[in-house]
Image (cartoon, rainbow over all chains, first blue to last red; front, side, top):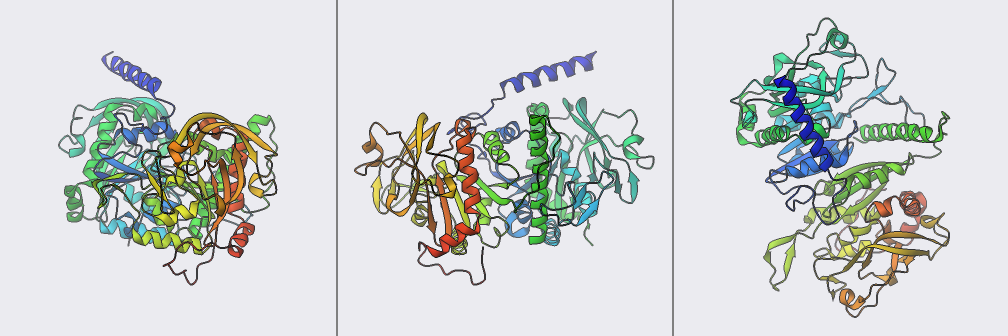
Length: 316
Length: 314
């Protein structure tokens, strides 16, 4: 009953916040409150990368504006983002935040019928190969050392065509096609929308847990995806569990209830947070605190030093 | 990179086409597939930052342009990476809805007047060389205020200047703060019916939108549209210069075809079918071989101390 009441409170607060969510900021004024300009004005320079998976633009961007005392954020979409994922052009940003889905499945040909090179999946969609320049540029950036924050569906980027990318993130998803992850075949994964969850912090001493050690409730899309438990440092776990995990992960990959972790990829500190599908998460104050903590950590000299002292070789 | 980018753009186009197709099919109540495209979609880089706007609304406007346009959003300062001809090579048109260069610095200039943020010198050279290579440019609404305080050549590229919060200088002539008049009912008259940018707009159209009183270089642009809106006190915004009722023009900047459209403050304009047609036409024209050939035949020298790239073509 106590748990139900907690969820009810979260739902009510979320509904209220959603109702208050303005459809648009008036021109000439910011949307982050207190005169916050669009894009924020905080000390951490953050590059926000999207494209490949739809999302509600205004509430999402408004969430970033609301973090505007912490970050100054700049939006870029693929394929322009590919160029920014390099040492040369990422140098003016402290953190790269990914809410993208690079290399999504699509048709097999270009507009004029030319075949697209990539992976033809079980659902007959073609997942294009990443360009050689993106692969080398991103590898070089990770080796140089840059704070990386991967959010929600960003764990589904390049799943079929660039296995090292999943190693960078710490897991892999595809909700619409069968996958082969670390050599294990599995069905399409699960995305369970609007799921009430309690998030437990399992690493309360980590800076990302600051102010959240009791965990928090939220209503959000949950996943059953292939997380690399043996390659990450857990930060948070969800109490969500699918009724039949094998339906989404096969019989050889156990379900993991990880919902946030940190890891090192080459020389870069990496955070992944599974939460954050829509406004019910974006307007949840605890989620915002969690995200703010993650960004501050990824941008910190301590995280960069930790990564450099504990490098993980991914690109051979 | 080009191959990968092209694949990405092609994919983005097809995904957009599928989305659009499903919307259209739902609307029509028919499962008829869309006919194949007869030419490549125009690849647009949409540049923003420096003036707030309804982000969902503007992006939906670009979504509505259909499968003939594939667009990618980038904000300043990352946008300046794409002032470079090589980096922008996979985009046919740069569409500007930005207004950088209007943030006052804490220190005043030697003349006691405010100073503003400015573009790095290397990016200025990049931009000049990109225009020498002939990139198609579409400037919308408040983009005419970009870099207005410390990059006079940029004003020449667009064809005018505005700032609604600060005094400005255009061609060494000082002006007061510009005028912006929100929600004005206007009738727009087409003044050159032969131009592709106004195709399908007939004699003109009505619109409710923000109007401006800004100094424009009337004699150096090719007028396309004029508004019937006249501000009550033009001198308050323009000093001794008479008010110009231009709301759209084309021109060349170096070897680039340029369109400027004054309209487009918010959803009131963005959902207006005539405005949508105008923007679609502008993008198609700026990205066309015909426009590039016209610009190359009628170049306007703007950047005096920059040499063109040897190999770059657009």
